[in-house]
Image (tube, rainbow, N blue to C red; front, side, top):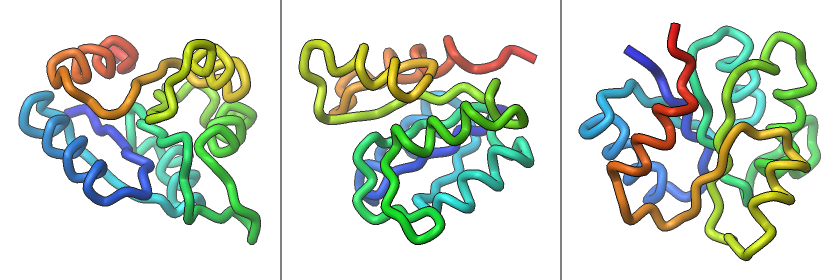
Length: 132
């Protein structure tokens, strides 16, 4: 069973994603907005893929506020976690944002909120899921 880690500070979004992923996708789901916990889960390979909210309003790392872009950069910069797929999730999807966010963060993919097409959501995540 593949595990998706949801990094999201909005509990309603986290619940919605969680339900779609487990019910329709058949995935195990973890959720946290605690950055140290995200790092630990990633390093210990307790997740196969990470859904990363871009605008985390409460997340701190070593006392400094960080957003999803920054956390993704940290994951991608660490050789232990660099190959773990990260999908950015954002409500702020202007033309060009997607490319900027992907380029800045080194993320593997991008999903816009709100998620309307549940099957496409699952398909997009499955497409980036490691196949081993």
